[in-house]
Image (cartoon, rainbow, N blue to C red):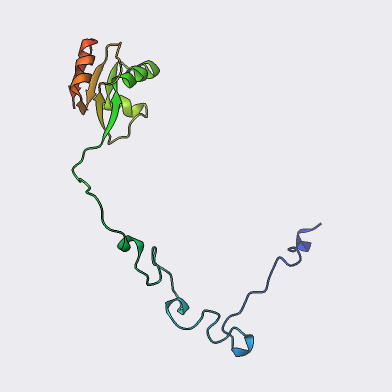
Length: 148
């Protein structure tokens, strides 16, 4: 077998359909695109979400609810989770930088600590927000809390 003898399998290559080459071709006139309208013109591309003149779904459905633009989204940790994180990563200080370095939060996340669970070890926290129950539990275990 030589490279110059290679060719595609029988029936794999088809002749290109030549559209709009006169009435005798059987595909002349409209070039199989139907009669008139935007889709028959060259350069046509449909817009995303276009439903052919029917009222689009985003306009058929009613507007519902309220979105508060000033809402602050916190990444929440319970003190029970803090205990597991301290054991797993060997942290003494629980701050935004150490959490980011260990891949637990993203760069812009704000952290809030809640009071569910138990904390046995002493730890210092530097977080954006903390609940009263969590703060008292951490201080009872000998730790310190600083709000950033």
